[in-house]
Length: 53
Image 1 (cartoon, rainbow, N blue to C red):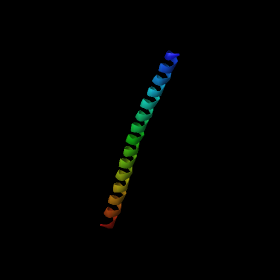
Image 2: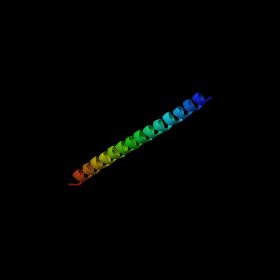
Image 3: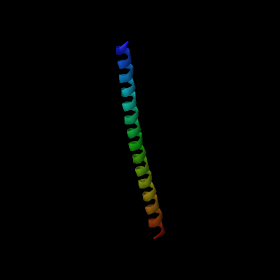
Image 4: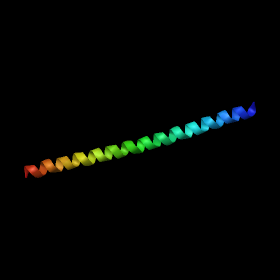
């Protein structure tokens, strides 16, 4: 009976670690998307400004 409980606890630990890793990954992806979006917005602004001159 104890072995089953240990296996259950181990699985919970693995699940928690996986969730944390996925959360970190999604946060990293979000930052990358925001960085890319800012880069595109800046490029568009530069194009508009260069057309005005």
